[in-house]
Length: 239
Image 1: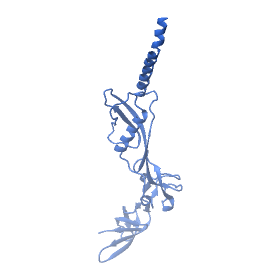
Image 2: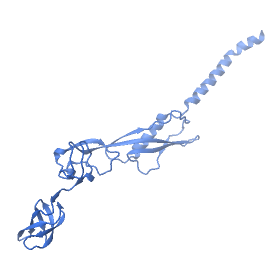
Image 3: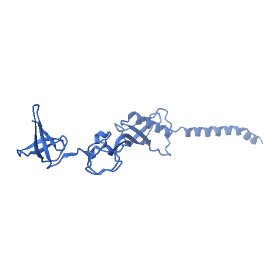
Image 4: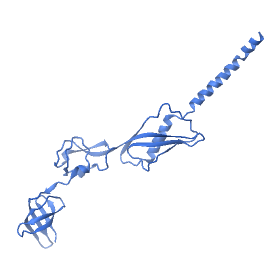
């Protein structure tokens, strides 16, 4: 009987010990680094080191839900092996420099947006762009080369080098100066000096864009000279 009473008396002690055990276990489980804190460290690092024009947005590839890292007692340190953070997919490292050291690598997808010139209607190769063909819109330019057109004036009166669909973001690579003069065209050869101006008839020996130096045959003398394209049907010669 005495033995049974002792067991009953010790029951509160056993419950207390069990409570301590489960509390300690629960605290140990809680003492892990949250994935949200790692994500915040990555975003802060990107914001401080990114070098992009215009607006941008960052989305992080979620960490494996099974990843369980010890709670870092110091501030997390983010880092990268790249000198400059660019648009697209990039890798950012995060490490803990406390007594229980650890490091992981995360993936971030960075999109950047700019106001760019886009086509409001389709165009065929060789057509000349006018203001009616263009609109300025905010677009994702993350995967584009940095030769896209940002101002209408850059594309206006240019000739397209290929067939382009409605909504195409214009690249300078798609544009050329139009040919104002074609080989065989009749042209006026203008020579201007301070005291007089001379105009002669000629034949273009080659195609030419504005400001280009082309070969022209003087119809009067039969001499071939070099002249600068001014506008359709007109070239100038400086002596």
